[in-house]
Length: 323
Ligand SMILES: Nc1ncnc2c1ncn2[C@@H]1O[C@H](COP(=O)(O)OP(=O)(O)OP(=O)(O)O)[C@@H](O)[C@H]1O
Image 1: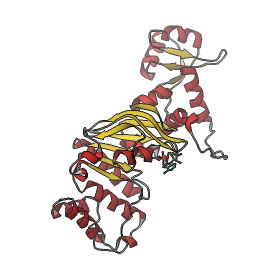
Image 2: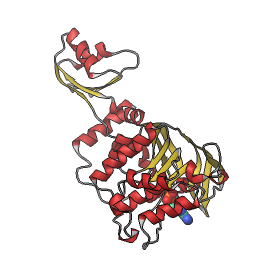
Image 3: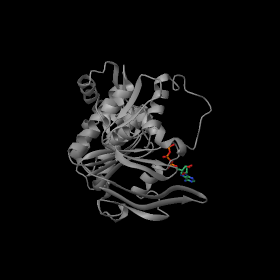
Image 4: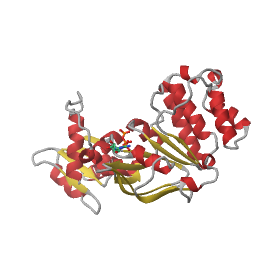
């Protein structure tokens, strides 16, 4: 369990982390998201005592990191690429860590196997690919069999097989009851891996929510329905918690608060012919972009081809009209 209370970090005039309050709970993967420069790495560094907060506090399993007698057994972290002596083998690197932290030798073999490094464990780490280096960093993070695991961009540099392996590893660690806190810019991957999300922008907390709820709030449960009699359909669908919008003269309505199935049944009951009935999907990426639109520090000046596609524009409208 990680608990941040009014956690803040200033670098001179720059406030990198601004009064963050959040709790990362055990038994699930929590994604830590935010645009570049939002303060994710700084927050993670403060969690493991590599940076000192200028305000507030953060604890792991009830204590500040420095107060733990055996921190590697408490929280395992993969932060930015580790500096490993290039001449040292993966095995020697892990074994030295284990020896200096009172961790048994058999655990070194276990993490080497867990991270799929058996074939290269005796090779010089300096010759490792980015993906292998990433696996070695994860092996080191898991060495102390910690109840809390924190990884900054763990899928960086991994090939598709590696990404899948990472997904299974993270969900497996969470299923064992561990606290798993992971930052990533890969929204599609986070949507598959994380259950809970903490989203920051310009150092501030923007959302502390589930993946499902974030998508729902962005209009992910909106149904588009086209019918022969939109005015009459609007009447029969009206009810508590139901919101119906549509342009005058258009056959289309956008409905929130009812499933496509419920809308279809109501329409049939009142003999209203339907031409289209679609639940509109909103991806985590779209929900994230909408939430963080005003918190992006570094804007590019090019438009991604296809981003302004009919579908995206449609979704943006849906969000607007449903709000
Ligand atoms: N040592 C430092 N000195 C001064 N400013 C810093 C320092 N470390 C970070 N910052 C600033 O603090 C802000 C937050 O940076 P941080 O690296 O925590 O963001 P991030 O969310 O991890 O970004 P990214 O997604 O790009 O890794 C940025 O504006 C950054 O420039």
